[in-house]
Image 1 (tube, rainbow, N blue to C red):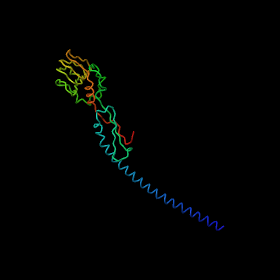
Image 2: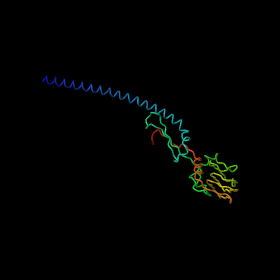
Image 3: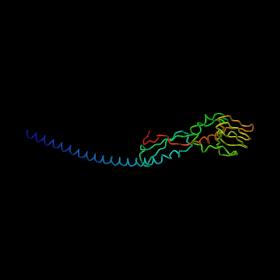
Image 4: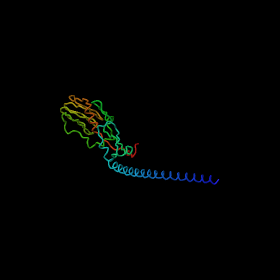
Length: 225
C-alpha cells in the first residue's frame, strides 16, 4: 500500500512538473508573441498617423490635380504610404462640376439653353464667360463665347471655330461660317450669309475645358468604403 502511494505521488509530481514546464514554455512563446504584436501595432499606429497627416494636407488640392480628360463624373483619389499594407489607405472622392449638362449634338440649338447649360454651375465659371470683342478667324484652337441677355447682336467676317452660348436672343450679322455649335435661350437669328456647321471635336474640347473637379462633401475615408 505504501509502495502504491509512493508511485502515485511520484506520478503526480512528474505530471505537475511536466505541466509547469509546458506552461513555462507556452508563457515564453506568449510573451514573444505579445511583444511582436505590440511592436507591430505601434508601427501600424505610427504609419497610420503619418498617412492621415499626409492625406489631410493633400486633400485640399487633390481634386484639382485630377485630369479633365477622365470621362467619369466621379473619381476616387487614394493616399498610401510606400511599403505600407494595401488595406491601410485613405480615400477621397472628387466630383465633376460642369457648365454643360451634356455635349451638344448639332449646330443650331436655338432656345435650348436650359437643356444644355447647368444654371447652378454658371457662377463657378462666370469669370471665364466673355463675349468676343471681335470675331477671330478660324484656327486649330476652339473658342468659347458667352453672350449675356443684354448682348443680342454679333458681327463676324470669316470662319470661326467656336461654341457660342447666349443667355437671350442672338442676331449674327456679316458673312462667314461658325464651326462648332450655337446655343441660345431666346431666338437665334443668323443672316443669310452666316452658316452654322456642327463640329464634334470643337464641341467636346470646349465641354471638357469648362468643367472642374471638386471634393465631394463628406467623402474622405480612412477605410475602403
